[in-house]
Image (cartoon, rainbow, N blue to C red; front, side):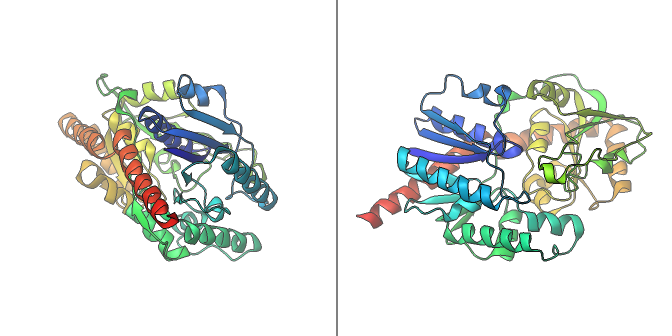
Length: 370
């Protein structure tokens, strides 16, 4: 089977695409991967070395959620149509909404990783103000959702949000994201610090909630302060703290794996998180998980995490301190998180789920065409 997959290089979708593409190629699929956003760095493409059956087409077209991108989106769609004509895949797997309405008779999957409207609702507790750009954005998402043969979301919570804001897709299902457990080390002796990973400029990640707490255990925060959309960049995030907080900035994957392996506790502070790869990576490193009590985290982590009252910094602090003070409790929750992530969020399971969907859609398409 030949699948054309789109991805972007500025967030977690790139990690997701790497796990998916690697797994598909190992199972004998041919993959054409087209990236948008920024040209990936050599570190971002190291995983492609030696992968047979992968055809990679990097571009620097900007992304649909950025400001003033209408011309870029039209040009990128034309570029993508040309690649489809050239490579003749069996199916399109699209990680952006805009291309769901691409002119093609092939079956196409649109994956709802996140969207601006649901992000705004989670961060501001109300619908975003109506602007010309937002009207354009809502239209493109709705067109992509309705034109897709199937819409996939990484959680039931995210799928419900898409249906509420943009309407019912032709077909929809939930496929949880996955990571390769062998990339992480759950056997290192833990140090006494609590970790959170997330873009500091993104209010949805809410990593500043951790920085604002008085804790007996040092807090480490990993993430970029630099917004990927140059239109929205400012000189500084304005983040500062007199508390025992270590701001590590962006880290390489190898560095981050080391940080995960040493962290005793992972603080999943997001107020908006359709899935959340970082908590999975922490769990696979055997960190105890403290999670914000939002619907997606409840759905995903169930009894494998300690939850704190939604967006309540004092309750976050209480949960961390309860684990810091009780090594046995901390070890128990670390083991729960590890076993839960192995069972639910492995890359192999994710790839199998997508392959089953691909096969069903391609077979149905062939029957209709016949």
